[in-house]
Structures are given as C-alpha cells and as structure tokens.
Amino acid sequence: MGKTDIRNEIKDLFEKTISSFTIADVTSVIIKREKDLSGSFQDFARLDSKISWKGVHNINKIDARGVFIGDYAIKDRPIFRPIQYVESHFLDHDFDMLTRVIVQRSSLHVETSLKRYCGRGLS
Image (cartoon, helix red, strand yellow):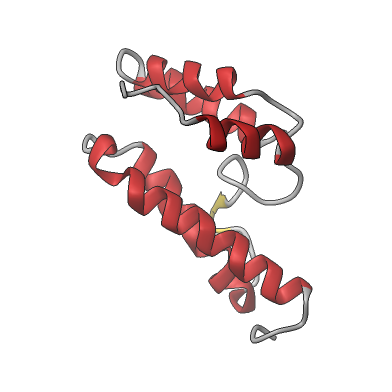
C-alpha cells in the first residue's frame, strides 16, 4: 500500500461516521502536506471545523502573555489535551512515523468524550 492508500474497511467506517467531508478531502491534505505544510494545516483545520465543537481549528487561544494555551476548562483537559498533541504531530517533520500516535491520541479524545457524555470516570 502506498502512503495515501486506505483500506476499504477504513473508508467504509469513515463514510458512515463523518458526513461533512470525504476521504478524498483527507487524502488531498496528506498529499499537499509534503509540498506545503502551512497550507495543508490550514486545509486540515478547515476540515476539522466541519466537525462540531472543539478541535484543532479552535482548541488553542493566546493568553495575555502571547502564549498559546488550551481554550477549555482545566477539568476538561483529559478530553482536549490529546487533540492539542494531534495538532503538534501534524506539524512535525516525522509525520509518517507518528501516524500510530496520531490515531491513538485521536481515539483517546473520542474515548474520554464518550466517558464524559455517558457519565463515567470523568467529572
């Protein structure tokens, strides 16, 4: 499989769960990333913004000192911190080596969100 080849099971799952953009949109961001990191991140953030609520596109804010900080309550750190790491991994030069970590951190975000929604473990 090439860099942008995606198994059919993943394509099917993606299409069933994300209706606001396509797997082709994601693939174009990955391809663009090799030539234009900044532009591909902007495209990534644009796609991310189509998924409601907090994400890479709006997870950080600049504080009074001019430093980026998480735009969420401290009690929500277990939910949103993984997404902040996904952003930093996307911008890393070893992106190809970090894909497993990116999936793990994204999954951790989903898992902790579900735990909060279902009233388990996170208060």
